[in-house]
Length: 253
Ligand code: ADP
Ligand code: MG
Image 1 (tube, rainbow, N blue to C red):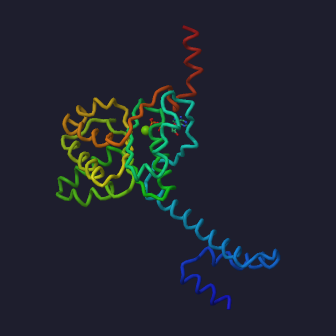
Image 2 (tube, rainbow, N blue to C red):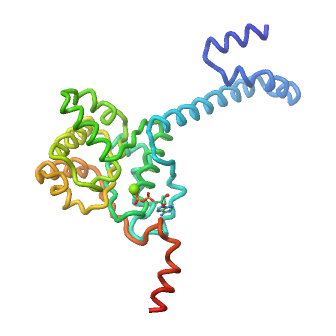
């Protein structure tokens, strides 16, 4: 009988129930558990396990450089962005309302951390996310465009519910960078899919970086139509340990 049950649970793709039912049945007998509670516990375990597996798989697919959460972000450390300001980016509205965000500021202020954390939260909310650097995206798409295969190459950047584009403006780009970047931004805009962009440059410098002021403006327009620009200010978290040294240096001077 038991062997049949296990075979049926396999066939129904219920591996967690299959793993747990024998032990839970013993406990149920000991505790006089109702049939209904017994069934509820097994179903809840199966669902919880599935959600976990999906998150693990989605995080792997997202290609984050590191995994950081909003809970790990010390909002008292930098001076400009508060947890409350991120509000709509951390719920389902990020995707349903296509709330893009641009995070700008000098290095070490937590731009990549926050971008990853927002995308991770989206994964927890049931969406798919993809992380890429501007460098990688522009390099990949420029090469694809030169080879005449731009459309299929756009897919991995256009398809996910949330795209993180990290480190825009860390270097100056080839002449066609503005075109391929615009394609991604516009395709996502038309599908109402949000992007989280980080940059160490003021937004006004984007035109020069991309060698095309009009396209840079079109890109920013689309990102900010329903999106928000956050400027991270304050000390660098990366070099926070240098604080005392700097103080003692200036004391000595
Ligand atoms: P940026 O992208 O702005 O250069 P990162 O997001 O890479 O900076 O942050 C550098 C490191 O410092 C990361 O390990 C990140 O987790 C950490 N960090 C930065 N800001 C904070 C913060 N406010 N609270 C906690 N960790 C932070
Ligand atoms: Mg960064």
